[in-house]
Image (cartoon, one colour):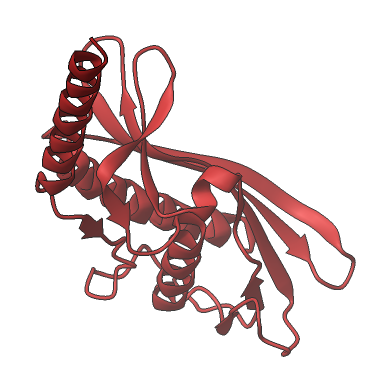
Length: 206
């Protein structure tokens, strides 16, 4: 009886080991890495008729912990936020948007100079921003969109007073409801928000 029990136990262990080994040997999909294009080769955003003599510095973009990782996030119809398993951003959303804003403002010709956060030069204005949404949103009607939402604060560096504030949001239709389609639409939304920022800054710094 003891021998049969031992044989049964040994067989169960063998089957369990074989199954776990088989799972381990299964080939996982390769990790796909996507980037946010800062717009180096895109046409210049809307410009003012005359360049300002003001110098602006861009403060580090703020955001939740979710935007400090390389996860590509999506929100389902039940408002649950999840990430694509085998897809990642090359850089975090907050750092990517930092680059997008710097490139777009520099190309706009709106200011005499656009300074990064690390610059020690004196700037007339400081642009602070918070990233609220950056991902793939599935909506009730069955469609889905790439969304970028940010709030901006323009600060006078001399008085430390907020000159103006603005929330900008752009949604772009997703052609294919997967990581590839989502990242393409998020790219479009990011550049659109940056372009709208140029228009807004042009109006409030006249």
